[in-house]
Image (cartoon, rainbow, N blue to C red; front, top):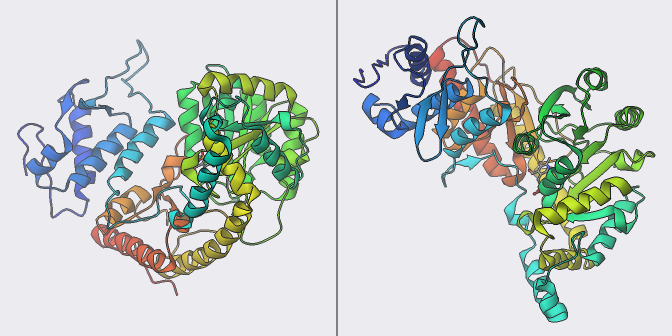
Length: 495
Ligand SMILES: Cc1ncc(COP(=O)(O)O)c(C=O)c1O
């Protein structure tokens, strides 16, 4: 096949997948100077038609080339060859190194291809929609209107609706956090809480450290707030204290961000001794920790552990959680708990950001807490998600490639799987997967640097056991098909 515009010819009989051939050839054209910096590439649909390949292959090739810094995309204008960075006397021309966030947006674009009704989609971070307590919410909103009238829609106090703040204070006291109502700030979900902490504690160009892999949202926020993000290696107990200790010397970060309970994306739970070490280290170095506990209540085994804030005697820990994952994501109610000097700054930044979180939503959530709906919901989440986790582990054992690794998460929504290193990558498996109507989150998305090429995150919480089984089977089949295409990796069934 020859494309007169781009001079590309693909060999269908080759063992090399078509999209990989496409990547190699476009890269060759760029490196050889046939496609200069700034040149516009054909739209993916057009190139796919010209070459007689699926559009997915072209989108995937463009995404990988963008992730490698060869291409850049401009919303609404198209895809272009990136302009070379040539420093005088700096040797050969270099491509700009993509930031974690640019890499993530390339992968995200690829993952958007999976938004089709027939796809069994494990890629999202949402809790199961079939659990939402809709009727209770409707009753609560009606009640709030009858009780409070226009007050429910007036400007709310910036720090939050006082009865909700005091309910949060009681809620966190029950898990060992001793705080005053003034230490509680209501936010637009945990996402806004994280953003407010970065805005109030960090300046342009400063560094924050986090586990690698980490929550994608913090990578995005760090980029938007122009702070550097540095990933620290992890083990099955979470962020490694030795590596963190070294990084504190080298990088002098202004903030440590961690998820002690059922970390996103790995599902790891930080044990008590490591929680203590982490708080002690931060206190010694006087570096604030932001602990994000949005998965804390999704606990299926083991005893409850105290949050870092409950172990904190010097006020270095800022705690965030939300009623989003556990109850209703779209209502956007979260909170921060921070000691005096931090909480005052946070309240000022919050007011500048949006004046206040909507009062109606705060009042409705407050009523749901008062009426015991959260407690019921937590119980329901635990029972049903525990069943889904069992289904996911059984399906992983049965259908995922031999040589894959995962650990059984004691809580949370995610199964983190490492595919065999000598086989197809997670991105390749993803592409083969969506052709079979299944999707997952590609592991590389969650790394602050390189990493995760063979990792995938599967949200088992959003599907019923039958769909989990069907979906994992499709992933196994996708991987098998790639191996058959390559012909270079053996897969034997795991029993
Ligand atoms: C670790 C973590 N923190 C925060 C958020 C954002 O949560 P919220 O909906 O409360 O803003 C998410 C959502 O995926 C998450 O996984």
